[in-house]
Image 1 (cartoon, one colour):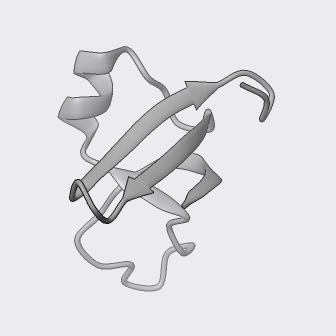
Image 2: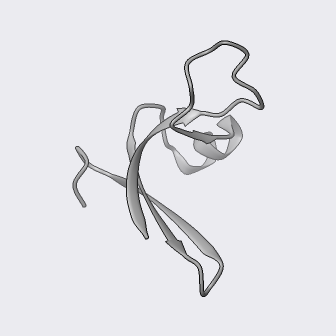
Image 3: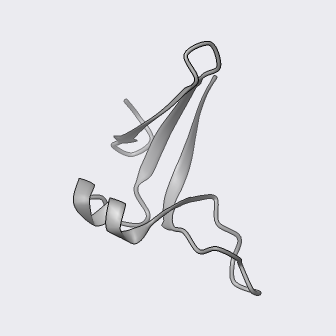
Length: 61
């Protein structure tokens, strides 16, 4: 299964803030050099039990 989502900094609860489309801890984003607002392709492989994230340019591979 594949989908593309806008990357946003994650929080534990929304507490009335805008819903998070795809949240990620800020420390991990900093480590990867990612910034909020980038489009991320998410690939889930149920057989392998993996979730792969890849930043794509303008929503394209």
